[in-house]
Image (cartoon, rainbow, N blue to C red):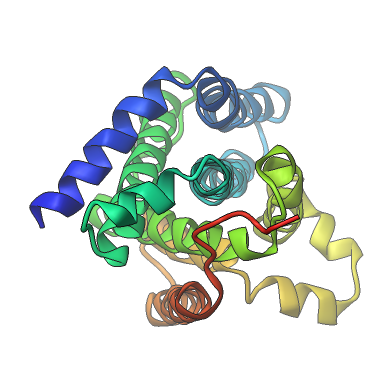
Length: 247
């Protein structure tokens, strides 16, 4: 456990010194998460539910950036720079190396998401959820699952320079399925909406909405996230690469 926390703290120090991470993960998550719902609240103030719908959709997109994308970028860079290989040579277990990195990224994603929520409560008139504990639970669970998926996705990324681009499909799917781009999914065939509802970001939105409204089933969203976590863990175990591909 001490080694696990030490890797997470090391990753945290690098995270807040990384100008790329600060300009993408932090700035984009906060900018989208606060700016878009705040704008919608001003443009369409009379339409009930618009602020909450926009907030949840954009929050899912922000978590995708801060957790999945940042994990993929970080671990791919560590792999290509042979940092992961050197860390294994120190005697650290694989689960401590990957787990520590994921703990760091997931913690930063949770911090950013909760910051967005607090700012919107104070400045945009977003109502406080009926069950704040459930909301925090789903934020933490979604950040953890998306971080795992980011680690699993590194197997499909050839080099660090294209890591951010290779994660963009996840961001776009999250935006459409979770409602971050508005009710776009209503314009698509019903089977597309059904598939998008299977995404982890859609599970997060369903659980978070239940936390805000006090209505809705929590079991299915939790099951959704649990299944994606299991898929990601299996992919990491089978496909994760510790070294760059040999040219």
